[in-house]
Length: 365
Image 1: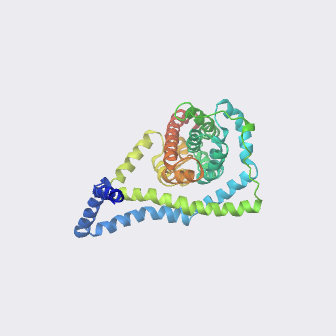
Image 2: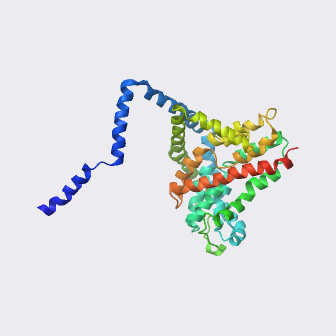
Image 3: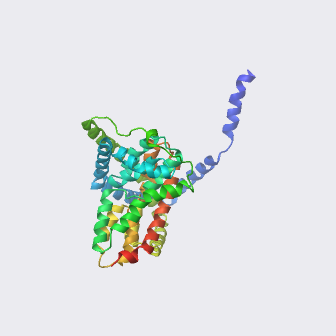
């Protein structure tokens, strides 16, 4: 009988011990009661502030504007490209270069789908491709960081080119240095510094990536996939990120953060108002606003703004959508994906500052 009772006795003793989260829970209960007694409206005000922050992004941008539809369309477009052999063609082009750099050539696939489609579709499509190509975890992290260097939708690139034309800024050198060169340079830099577990892969070692599904099935299944991506991954991730922004606003911290961000962007030769829009809301909206500022903004601030907007921003994508998508479609965890995305964002910020300083004198008439 004693032997049978010993485990339950030990379990009872363990349950009696206080854990740190239980102490926090008690404090939260006591604090909640104090709030309800002395300031019952504060909780309602907190929720109103958070809802006011989340609703415009989730409802006005993703549900009732073109952005949500664009995500679904981008998945359809990406899957059609994949079905027509785009991935295999891309691999054949980049195998010689990546073989020379000792990196699996599949790392550039997300960047290409990012430019042509959408950053969420890029992860959904490219994640399984990297796994199929037997890319190491380091190479998958390189793929995420490199993807952050590319515009997260083709619309952002097109609207950015229009803004450059308004300011009479030469576009070709900027496109070359800001968008195409990073696809090669960033994987190499990361492979010799942070993510070294890379390997040379010959073309014959790689499988073919073009699926054999029927075209009608590709279209309808990708439409369903795009809707699932929007409603089950992107919107929840965006809501979570802007919940914290709303909480910071309620406690009076966010204004100081926003002011500091504006100062930093100006020092980096990036137009602050559109730079903040790129970081917090939507780069596509930011480059659209650039064209409207032609008479009021110093053209020397436009190059950096263009480079920053043509990236994996906003922050809700970096901290919400990208990790959720890649954790589902690749070998990476959400934590590993976030770290890789942050590395990519740091590189992009450095690129925006460097190109703004070095290229602007040659591009602005």
